[in-house]
Length: 474
Ligand code: SF4
Ligand code: SF4
Image (cartoon, rainbow, N blue to C red):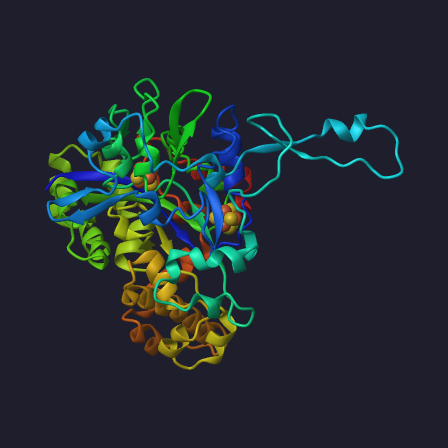
């Protein structure tokens, strides 16, 4: 057993309000540069929709990720030798229009336009060519379902669902999907890179691009099925989310997580067995990848894990953080969080709690099992997004979320702790109260449990000053 430490994130889609606050500090700090205008390491998409870049989930078009063929696991677009033979021609690369041509506005015109009867207006100008342009796409083009009546039919998550019904006014549904690099355990971007410039950090699993070694072949861009590596046209090198590692090393959480208005993001470490990655990524059926991936997570409180970690030199403060990890609790213990498109076989490490909606029908329902089937968002759609079409884990997560609400209602309104609600979803009242605490109260110190790399004895920021310095934010 080879124990590795992975920094990872869980996003509670039930609480995302689509405010895009997470994207802004990330943009301001990491991609506010020439050549990076079109890059959004973090962007928030509306589902249903085809996203940014357009149809990123459709791997028959983009050929990202891994597939299980006769000879075993291989990159969908071909291995390194295949890529080296076609190094000057990459037909699977998205073009700029599939992301969007970055633009600014002709602000000067507002103050320099000659006096006329009407107020002056401003026109969009390309940040690449400087020419006047028509805006045709963007990182949140389908915000709040804008234009989805036209594009929604191309959303692959409608596979097996009559999308026309759900895109009609009466049955329409929506939720937000904030997206970033998944810092995968089996990253296709790293395996695709002919120069060896992409690597996964040994100490915490963060996937990075060595800017000195990158030669700009861009096979990482096409190889990533989540399309979260970007090519900087100014520097001629690839760039991607760095999981804010300079902040993490100081015990701070990522910018997107810290700024999240809905308190939907959880950051923590997970320990896993690196010797079994290939086995998990090679699970026979697509829907077997998620359980095999989950099986790699090691219990940080188990004596055999503690002994193995000690013998392999994993520091005590990392083990302590792993035992308090909200990610482990949400993904492994309670099975509320699920991976995004496990069928891409990269073993992604940014997981999602499925959204539960609408609340009204749930409140009216006596039976949590029926309520989940009557929710507005089809379970099948969520299963196509999160579990390769397997509805069972999605139902388990949704029922548990529904049980928290029903249990807390019985506690607060009727003044009794209804153990039958907890039992109906395989839990006890104590676990439900803990879930409520982590998901609804969501204190800063519970959401972010980060072992500091450089100062193991230093306390994380929240114990020093609280969120933004305001104690009430904690
Ligand atoms: S999501 Fe991130 S780590 Fe995974 S393949 Fe894409 S760029 Fe690499
Ligand atoms: S800041 Fe939080 S709530 Fe707002 S869009 Fe981002 S993830 Fe969602």
